[in-house]
Structures are given as C-alpha cells and as structure tokens.
Length: 333
Image (cartoon, rainbow, N blue to C red; front, side, top):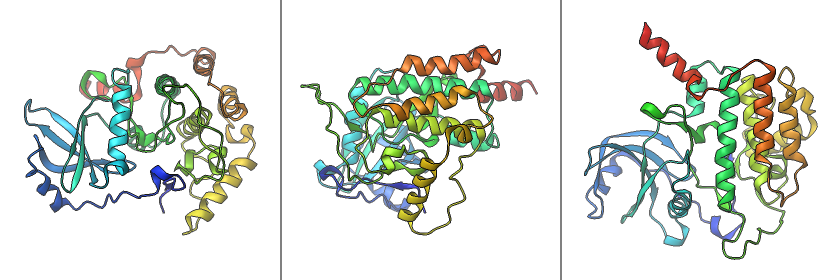
C-alpha cells in the first residue's frame, strides 16, 4: 500500500482527482485546439500528488519540457489550478522550476513546466542508499533555503519526501529544486497576515514515512511540520533507512499509519539518530519543540549543518555533490 493519504476533511479536498490516465488517451489531447505543445513518445517521467508527468516538446522552441496531467473536473476542484497558482507565487525564487502555462482541455488539464533532472530518491537508490556526509549536509542546507522562501510566501509544503526534490539539468546539477505543490496550502492570509487557526481532527496529509508526529495526531499542519519532516528525511539519507520502514506488514493503511505514529512517539531521538552527529538530534528536537504558530529559525538550522561540516573537517562546495563527482569520474575514464 502507498504511504500517502490525501486529506479529505476539508472542502477543498473532498473531491479526489482521478489520475488513472491511459497512455492511448494522451494522444487525444493533442487535438485540443488550445494545445500548442507536442509529446515526445509519451514518456512518463514521474507522478505527482494528483497527476502524471510526461516529457513534452515545446512546439515553438523545440526544447523539452515537463507536462503534468489531471483529468478535467470542476475548475474549483482542480489541483493543477491550485498548483499553478503556487508556482506563480513562487516565480523567481531560486530552486523552484518555471511553470509555463496551465491548459484546460475538454478531458484533461495540463500544466507545462521546466524539465529537471532525477529526484534525490532516484539518485539515492542508484547510489545504493549512501550519500557522503558532505552531500547530506548540502542537501538539507539547500532545502532549508527552499522552505524559508516557500514559508515567506505564506505557504506550507506538507509533503516533504526525497521524490519531491530534483536536481537541475546540465550546468544546474548543483541546484536542488522543490517540486509538486499538489498538497501545499496557504497558512497565512495574504491581505490580513492572519495565520490559519489551530485545528485538530484532521486526516494524515502527505507521506507517512516522513510525516511529523502532529500530522499523525491529526493537527492542522504549519511550518514546524515541514521542518520535522525534513529532519526525518535527513536521518533517512544519513542512515539509509528509518526504523518504521519495512517492519510494518499490514494491508490496512490506517493500521499501518497508527503503527508508524506509535513508533515515532516511542523512539528516543538518541536512538533514532544513533551513530549520527549530535546536531541531527538538535534539529529534530527543535522542530518538535516549536509551537503551532512559530516561525522556524532557518539560520539556526543551517548553522547546525555547517557545524557538522566544521566538526568533520568538511568544506562546503556545491560543485562537490556525489552525483557531480560521479559524472566527472565517468568522463575521465
């Protein structure tokens, strides 16, 4: 079973979007008069929270792009519309892909975007689930910058996981991009600056493996939950696994989520982070100690990463990511 459950106790998320798009049906959208892009062999390259992603060709420039599909539905229920709005809010932010257009077809909605490289999860698996300490430090540091910018726009991410962070292409492979805002949500009103009120009784949102304890407990998500989830992803990258992976055998997702929740609550942080720098404990503890309305101290958290580097005699160099070094070594052979 998948470790993802869409939140369904709020009006905007009551309707589930059907993403079961058949390959042969993709060709039909090319005939829609509003489409100015063509497909390149209908190659699927990913799947987001509410849609499948394919490689396409910009008819005007001939450049490759990414195209994300969803089955067309009521405009107010379109997850791609919400995601497109968020991309436009984030436009110009470093480490966020460009969103070109949102097309509303008769059967499908299509979001056209900048094409990026592989995800961190994909790279991690190819590296036999082992990154260097330098790479781990730089990954977390860059993602903290992404979260700081996202939060500054009044948006909470709500789905931290390695699949949602991609590296750039060509000379941008040292940049980690944040993608897939299908589950993201405004936590602050733009006009009034008022925060979303504290609520409970919510369903799990996002990916259970990295979800915060408060997420498991049904509490409205805020900035602190993005930070705690990033802490779990940090441990995953540094150790290659999390304690609640692979040990919970049940076909019932609710029972599975409940077991993950209980283990997260029970396990001591020094046990979770055993063998890792002590700053990893401080990172997660900081997130857990935050109040619902608190703004994270991103500089402090990045400082923890820098301290790990100093303590281990590591110099930060974004051109020294493992995948860049591997590529250079392959070119020298």
